[in-house]
Image (cartoon, rainbow, N blue to C red; front, side):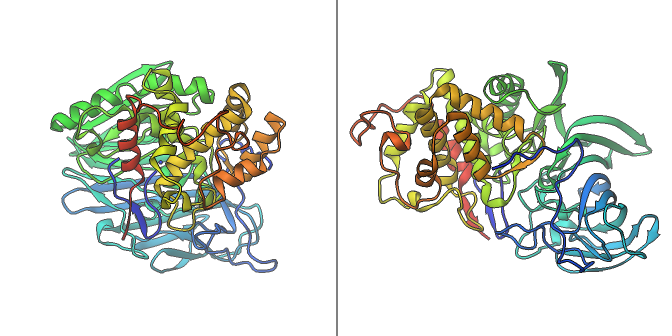
Length: 509
């Protein structure tokens, strides 16, 4: 994971099941009955103006050209969506200057604010009607700040359009909230001699004079913040594993950091096989990872191909960050949050994946890591004040969401037993595959599988601003005391803690 409105990670470095048909988006809330104006927000309780209401996007066809020297990006994005109500006007999240908008092949009028592109089509769109929206634009993304946010990352030789949750609006107009997923075709045109990496499968590379266009396709539903492109000079490795294309790319001339990054990224298929045994089948049609020529302070679980700051490898190998980001392919990418307050379902689960890897590979069991984390944070430590099930706006990536989040899952494992816990992890990924889900739905699943009333357990771990009492009801092993928690530090502890601290450090901007 990465940043949030007015907050970003600067560390080096995370009820009823809803099933969506391939390429479909979850219904956005309509405006008040009788109002034909699409809402400027999708209804997130933390961020009222994130996303938009009144329509659902099915597919984005994004075509941009980029010049690193000037940082100028020019593009045309075609959006196929359908109206979720009578719609005389609708919003898109976008910050670059727009030169034209067309709706269903007819020129539309529009106004543009600091973050919202407000479009008025020639004719009112009917509930259920297909909307084909075309937006043409050009600008310098690094010069644009909206609500204090400027997520655009220039690298030594190009750019990394990577961020969470704010990045899409800096390079394509979108319904920018995880609740409205869509499929993607992305074409990026750059000078020959540069690579342009993106999500999914590489469809083609086409040359025209001194320019080259890279066409990437993500055929599974994807949240807008997970769409990315990176431009630069890379050492690219291509192979096929289990029938899937694997593309890893590390910025050329990366020195020692680059060599460590390349070695760890090459292990991505091995990591994914391990995680698939715990979480179920890998949900996508491509895999890999990218480490650009920049130290931008985080890693992000971009769908099929996470992007990592190379600083994660400044002290040597660091496979744990790869384990963390690839676990998000299940928890965060395939199963996305219903609202941003559900972020524990992303970061706690990815952090726990590191514990599972440590356990399997003899670096320290999850039970020992649980004890060590308990010992690390005394009862009065501010760490326990964060209610990770509802951490509050701008606080989604506090370290407690990661560490207390992993502890919650290990405690659940102890409380309901490993067989039921394993079923819960796999069923969660399968039941909500390519969709969205919330914490109450996860609690309902855990209770259904285990046959237990877990209300007080989850209240203690997720919704109480205090250290949970070390009881068996709260998932502690029998006989657990503060003294029994004093266990030898496992070999993996220092690296996991280092990785987690880097993943979770925040800075107000």
